[in-house]
Amino acid sequence: MKNKVGFIGVGNMASAIILGITGKKYEAEDISIFDIDENKCAALSEKGITVEKSAEDLVKNTEIVFLTVKPGHLNEVLKSIRNAVSAQNIFISVVAGVSSSYIKEELNNYSLSVVRVMPNTPALLGVGATAVAFDKNISEENKQNICDIFDSVGICRVLDETQMNEVVSVNGSSPAYAYMFIKALIDGGVKQGIAPDVAKDLAVQTLLGSVQMVKNSPLSVDDLIKAVCSPKGTTLEAVRVLTENDFEETIIKAMEACTKRTRELEGEIKE
Image (cartoon, rainbow, N blue to C red; front, side):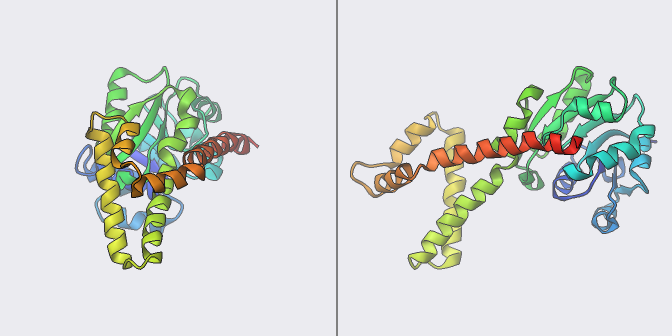
């Protein structure tokens, strides 16, 4: 009996998805993995997940195949599995900047079902945010099945593939921006004499609460900001400094740089 889902490449993202879906969407025996670094497979193997001897074997024995490798390794992987591909396979690519048409071209099979996804690492805790783009070869049943996989580790939102480069900056890379902001709050507190552990606890909980306010409040984000800013108050002064130093514009510029780099990746892969 074929495993229902397999992962070529067992890095942080693949591990997050695997651990998220195990025992929910799939049982361990329904999952197979392959990585050239056998050490990466050891911990998952102990959980009952099948470790294949090669990427080619994984494709032959698996229906849904996740391509969770670094961009620089993609061509090598696609070349190694080209002769193993069959009509039953659905390929889910987590590789940023790589179009579904490129994967089909490299596998020499334009009738393949290929899905582009952009998840993020909070999937490890079941609170990930994944963007998904389906091609025309994916059936409605398989679309739902794939969305269910990502819903089991957070939320899933469907986009057109033309938006998949841009969305990397919104959900794929943005945890790093959030971590930088949290670090700044902690470091700022410590600089003013707050104990590091206290600063961390207060900063993290404040952001958790703020996220819940954005998610659940009927107010717009702009109105939520105004609600914290009393006239001539402390928050208003802090917001003034952030605005004068182009806080929002800097984030947007960072996102645009992320998108530019995403677009560059496919060109580099093709070289």
